[in-house]
Amino acid sequence: MQIKIKFTECPHCKKWYLSAELMSYTSYGSSEYWSDSKCSEISISEYSFMPFSKCDNCNGFFWFDDCRQLEDYEIRKYIKESEDVGQNEKIIPHEDKNGRTKVIIEFLRQNFENYINENESLSLNYPPSHYWFDMPKHFIPDLLYILKKPEKLSNENEIYTRIKLWQHINDLIRDKGFQFSHITSIRRFADIKFLFTRIKMRKLQKKQHEAYKETRIGNMLQLSKLLQKKDVAYTDKIVLLIELERQLGNFEKAKSIIEGADISDLHNYSKFIKKSKRLILNKSTKLFKI
Ligand SMILES: [Zn+2]
Image (cartoon, rainbow, N blue to C red; front, side):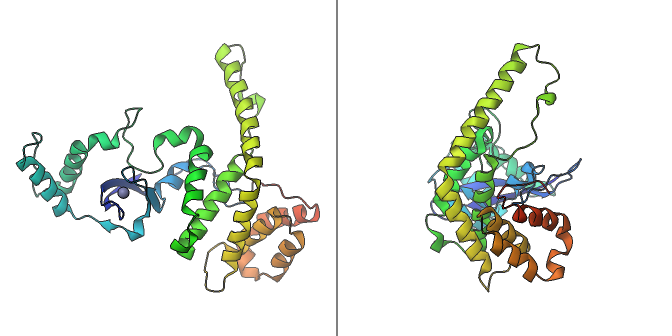
């Protein structure tokens, strides 16, 4: 696993951020792909490659592409300046082959409170670690907030946000294959408690999914419209359009996209197309594992 450290400035309030970007990631074992293009095995890389973040100082969302990247000398100057006013006793990093590492460590040391959360673990990136316990609950409202002003988003960023919203609403009903057989023994009280918590959570998530019905449909329609724009290039455009139309219940339209598609566009998706055709025939809108 290779990690790149970036210093970024919030474009709204100018607060400095340190974020870790995953450069390469080896996944052991097989990945599961779903029909809405979600890959269930890569949650680590999914959230480490996010192109946007949320500022914990001004609560504004920002896209890394729109941010100014800080230079090492600026951090050094900052560290030097705060030492001059005698806020703390610090080691000033020197310019050497490990200079950058020292700057990063020193920056962290000075801003440590900003990077520490309730669980006392370092949380450099958005989404913050407390989101992980119930990602749809925290993440969906953030995505909806970003989409309140779509005119401020580029086509590319709007497509990204809408795909994430689509997938995270689907997560509420995504059957990740939990089976009773996964519990080897229910002798222990903790096992029974876990099982009931799991059942309760699934019931609650199903309710949440129903509450998002209008949002879900509106988002899929908008995403389909965006992907059909002539000037929009997106790698899996055709496949996503087929799935969106089928999940919206527009079976004839989904069928006509498959029939009208270039063979080369569908070349790598034979399994997906085969399953889609069958579900279109059965007039089914269900999400499936490829
Ligand atoms: Zn800010």
